[in-house]
Image 1: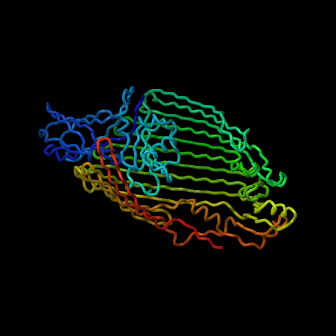
Image 2: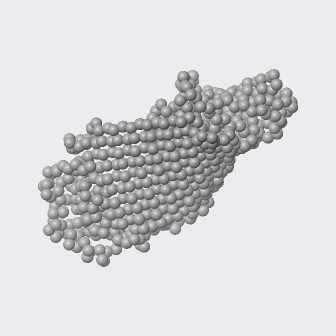
Image 3: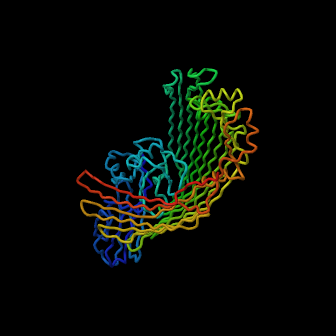
Length: 616
C-alpha cells in the first residue's frame, strides 16, 4: 500500500560558518511548524541528536571547527534524508520526500499526526483519507466537518493553483482546510480555503476497476409506481514510463441516474382539486477523465502536467410537482482544466510555479418554445421564459512563489496573473410567459377577459466581458523565539476597472504552558466576478429588454407590447468599488493530557458589498 504523500518538509539551518552553533526550524512548505522531527549531526566519531520543540526549533552544540559533518533528518512517514555539510556562511534549505511504504502494520500514530487540533483548520494525510471514501467530494465534506466549517462557500486550490475541477481521490495525498487564514498568499476571507495536494504514482504498474448498478427503490412518495435507478463505473491505471523519469496516472468514470418525477397538477380538464398524476422521467448522465504525468529526475526538480474533463447531460430539468413535462429543459455542461506545475529546490530557496487553464461550457434548451402558462398553486405549462442559453467561461492563471530562509526565519514572496473571458448568449421565448393568480382567471382569459400578467423579453441577448487581475505578496517572520512568533505580510491586488488595493496581514502566537494563544488581523479585497458585469450588460438598453404587461388577454399579446416601456434596465454604478473585509481572530488552546479544549472568536466587517441599482 503506497504512502506517497507529497507534503514537503523544509529544514532551514541558520549557519554562520561552523564556528557557531547550528540551529534551525522544521516546517512544511506553507510555514506550518512540525514538532518532533529528529535530526542527527555526525562529526567524525561524535554524533548528536536533537528533536524539534513546540516551535519547530532544533539546535546543536558547537561542532569541531573545520570538520565535515553528516546531517540526517527523520519524521514519521517520511524517508530519512542525509547530506554532508561543511562550512556554510548562508542558511541551508533541505527538502525531504516521503518514501513508498509497501506494507503498513500500525497506522494509528500516523493518523494522529495528520490531524490538526485547532478548531477551524485541519490537515488530513493520505493514510487518513483512504479510510474514509474513494470520492473526492466526500473527502472534502469530511475534512470540513472536522474543521467545523460546514457552512459557507469553498475556494479550492490544487497544488497551489485555483481549480474548478476535483482530482480523483486516488491521486490525493493531502487535504488542508483553512490552514492559515491570514496568509498574504491568498485573498479569500469569506470562504473556506481548501488546499489539495496530489501525489506522484510509484513506479509500479497498477490497475483498478469498480462499478455499481442500483435499482433498489428511490421512488417518490407522491407516486407509488415511481422508480429510480443508477449506474456507475470507475477505471484507473498508473505506473512508470520505461527508461524515463516519468510516471503517469489515468482515471475515468461514467455514471447515469434516472428517476421518475410525479406530476401532480390541477388543470381545467381535470377539474379543480382532481390532482391528476403523471410520471415524467428525468435523467442525468456523467462522464469524467483525468490524465497526469509526473517528472522527477532528482530531489531538486519536479514537474507535473494534468488534464481533466467532465461532462454532465440532463433531461427534463425542473419537471415534477406542478410543472408539466412540456415546461422542462435539457442541459449539457462541460468543464475542462489543464495545469502544469514546476518545483525547483536550491540551496537556500524553493521555487514553485505553474499555470492552469479552465474552460466551462453550459448549454440549456427548452422542451417547448410555445407560450408559457403559469397558474399559481395549480400548474406550469408551455415553454419557459428562456428558449435557449449558451454560456462559456475561459480563464487562465499563472502563479510563481519563492520560499527562502534568512537568519533562521522563513520568508516567501510571489506573484499571480490571471485572465478571464465570459460570453453569454440568451435566446428568450419570443411568446413569453402568461401568469394567472387562480384557475378562474385562466378560464376567464380563455374566454377573452384581460386577467393575465405577461412577462416577455425582446432584443439581443449576446454579451461578452473580459477582465485581468494580478496580485503580488511578501510574507515573513518578524519575530521568532522558543515560545513566540509573529508573522506579517502585505498583498497588493489589481483588477481591471478596480485599480490596486493593498492588504496588510499580521499573525502571532505565544505559548504559555499549558495554553497556546493565537491572534491575527488582516484586510482583504474581493475581485468582482465577471458574472456581475455580464448580467448587467444583458439588462442594459442595448441588449435584452424585459417587459411586464398587466391585465392582458390571450388576444392582446402582440399589440400590448408596442407602447410599453421595459420594466427594468440595469446599469453599472459609476462609484462601484470592490468589496473589502476587515477580519480579526483570536483563540486560546490548552492541553491537559489527551484533553485539548479550545476557544476561537472571529469578527469580520465588510464594506462596499455588491448590490444593484435599477432605473424604472
